[in-house]
Length: 464
Image (cartoon, rainbow, N blue to C red; front, side, top):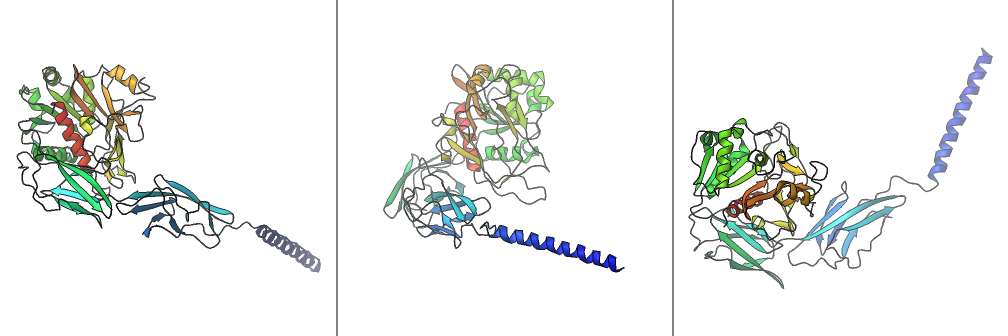
């Protein structure tokens, strides 16, 4: 027994010695100077007293300076943890006109940040009769379309301004908007001219909203219903047209533009392919009629012979409830190279030739029927697509300034006059459904861009 006991003591001694060695090694390792618990997060970031919004997870800092501020040479006040250092000297003037990247270093640890500095727009909102105008702070324009029949000679705009900003004529003034009106926005020594254009839809224009429901009131898809309601609220000549009516021989020759916005399914309804329907619409177009096809309806260019057989949208997808979701990024389009095209006039842009349509944080189903150019269909790029489809691609996704990646807005015509326009991207979203739990969606602040793009397209098709 004693012999066994001595062996146990010996083994225990070896184990204790091994543990001691391990702790000794750990202590020795710590003495090398490597530390992993030092703070490297920015505590505060200010420019001219304006506090930045810090997202330590994303490594971003956003600073919105008052209207009239300069961003080209500004000093920043940055608070960082004790012992940490910066690789950019913010006590010296820094050019914040582009994102600025810097690093916080503390011992062996570091963290990178990107600073984005913007200047607040002077005008928060511009409304007449409770309808919001589209404000383009790049071009300094204000555009608003009021319902048909509105008297433009004595309107009272309600204008909300950012702090410290004044405007002339003042909010609430009675103004004649028969012609564009110049507004002067002032903050301190900074003054900017905005030109406000207020109009009404073309009188006498007949626009038919095409659908599978029997009547306007019978539409059940909320995206289609919202679009149709907007049309009827803004065009005195709006009417509803069902596929059943076309199939039964109803005359459509007196309609200026037929708009089909289809959101119900990726596959177009079988009635749209009835020979009587396609023949009637082909004849309508050949005799001067115009078509606006949006979202899934963009696929109809194939059946109607607008494009050669098989050359319709090659990338059709989207979610349907209860699927769908929220993206923190806003979705938009690039129409670089076509900034002067009538379809894009009056849009609120975030860069020249770029406009958002769907706000980040808004629930979306992403109903898309576009052409994917680089790998599919043998198009290769925009030039290849134009050659093979006979159309003119006008816009792509917002990152694609060369318009060689996607076709999201396009037109076709005879003898140089456009008679078909398609808008095919998922960002063209009229109604933002509640999420899977029934929670209301965040409102889409860019809905006015969707409305303006649609109105411009309708007016463009009839040559206004």
